[in-house]
Length: 168
Image (cartoon, rainbow, N blue to C red; front, top):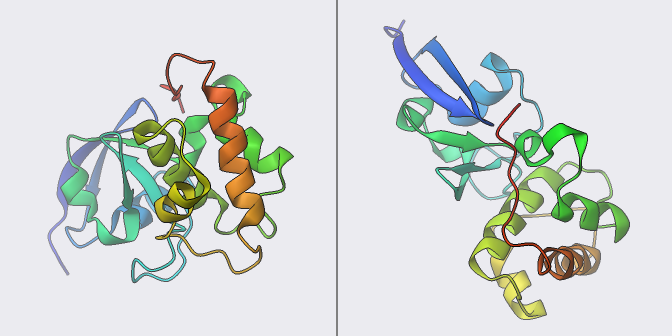
């Protein structure tokens, strides 16, 4: 049995201090310790992208990061994109443009889309496909996902910044 270690992580604007085993993955910490189940566990091999979260503002696959590595960092999960129950424009785009079916890949797709639109507020269709290539959807043909990202980019172009919740 490994010796537990203390970590402090800010998740969706709320600071959490926990005792964990050093080998615990960030995705398991979020789901099992913090009960934030929007981040999905898909493949455990970093192939599917269902576990994408923002680590200090950058998209990472939470199945490839140890929770210990996130000590002192800020994490944003899919739950953190909807302040006060208002959907983020990317979430709205996925809803309105039917960019989801079973919904399993959706949190990772949305978080990857967030990173894409942060880096490139007006991506072309090819740039959207390239930006989401680390995410796998087994249900859609990706066309509606691309439309959802295009819709979000259009709606967000009138905003000055991409809003992220500071509360859980």
